[in-house]
Amino acid sequence: MTTVVQPSVAEQSEAEALYRFQTEAPETVRAALAMTATRIGGGVVLSMRDDTTRFWSKALGFGISAPVTARLVADVCDFYRAAGTPQAAFQIAPAFLPEDWAEIRAREGIVLGSSWAKLVCATDEAVARADASDVPPDGIRVAPLEPRHALEWGTVMMRAFGTPVEHYAEMGAATVHRPGWHAFAAWLDGELVGTGTLCVRGDTAQLFAGAVLPHARGRGGQTALLAARARAARELGCRVLVAETGAEQPGTHNSSLHNMLRLGFEVAYERPNWTWNLEPGVS
Image (cartoon, rainbow, N blue to C red; front, side):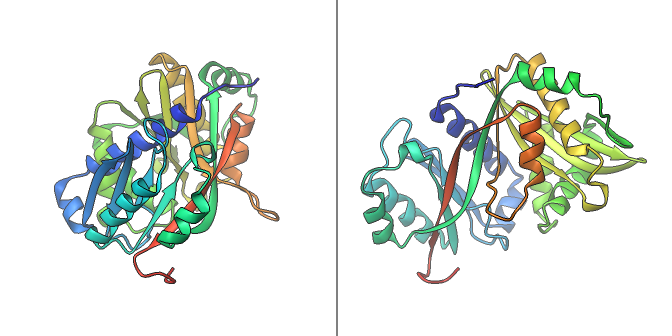
């Protein structure tokens, strides 16, 4: 089944979810990580100056309401310079890259990094495939998260992704209490071992933060988290699911990607991460 989703819809879904994920974090967390954000040219520009992972500073959602131009990119880079951001990623759908992108990025010192796969799926298709599956998760139970477990859930999310817990866990936990977010947890013998949430925007559901702790992997937990969120999205009236994961490179295997493909997701396109550094030549 081919799911037709315009790049503008897929990009805005992710951009707005990420914008909320960071800007709605507690003020203590935002201060501790030196978080700032703005909107430029219809896109979102997120800075986390003191992020040791260098993952969360990114600019995305461009090319939809205004074209990507040299002036727009310069304005984004100026924002990062003013914020003292060591490194940031431009995430722009290939369809929205201008013809002079090579010249623009050369001028700003932007270099090619890894690529992500943008995945989309009709909600009904994902639910149908989940219902037809005859392989139940091995000892894993997935259920909507009870708010009292929010901080534990945020902690597991960050541990599963291999990132620091202090401050970052609180950032994740804050979404549990926000309207439009719907968090799910995977449990193994009473231990919270997996996380996943979705952020609803109109008839689109953005899947976010799907992760399982290493010792609980290989039991079908991530697929169960995907299925639970797809069912919730259908109940909420969402027509389309959107997600991202790392694109496979030759000789590599991304289990998350294949779990989504089995549930009916399709790769709409691969999107490079274009890396900008405050100090050129430093990675």
